[in-house]
Image (cartoon, rainbow, N blue to C red; front, side, top):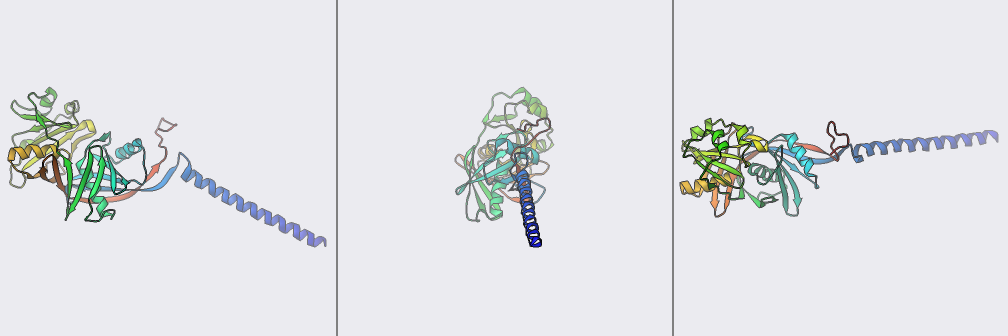
Length: 323
């Protein structure tokens, strides 16, 4: 009898110890998961896909590289700015689905911008490439410059952008004149974004070495420099400098061609133009002028893709409280 009672007590104790061990084990798992996924200081492992795309080219490592982030939910402006600084490209585009459209924002490493051509081209390219849009669907983007659309036409993408003509200036700012070593009689214009400087030859555009420190002081996003093309391959060439936006020289600038298009349309009396941006990487832009719109045509190629970990609260050195 005593032996039976002892066995029963031992069994109960062992059973309770087993339950206790199970409780402790699952409690440990809970706290580990909590620390990894739910705490304010840890990474939130939401799969935010990011793509690096070379725009206005059909060859990798040329054209203008842009990053495209496919968001699943709203994120803070500061988080987007941090990602753009981390990518350190001229622009990073952030796409958030809104029904049949996408909310699109563009950030340089330093600030958010109102209009960007190559990152819009890259964003549209990604939507078609990953199958979020079929080839016959238009890409529709709500942006700080209104509704922008993109159409896929074979290997090319056409962006419907607003025309941004420049008004020619009677006087030239001294800082601009000195930055580009301009001579009397050089044509200078300005739109709401940039200065437009027209030089005599393609050779001058290609060999130009501007004073970026002086350009940075100008009351504009940047400076467009252009001339008629010397060969028969293109109608005009250009370069674009925007040090105040964190971009000393942009490889290929779609939004600058919203200004260049109306200028060269008037000068050459043509509505269809082919342009080359003569940066080190170089890029090709097809233009069609339609009333107050500019249709920018370009190609794009994806260089790589990956996945971001969105931090709920980022912490900086010397700032233990986070942002």
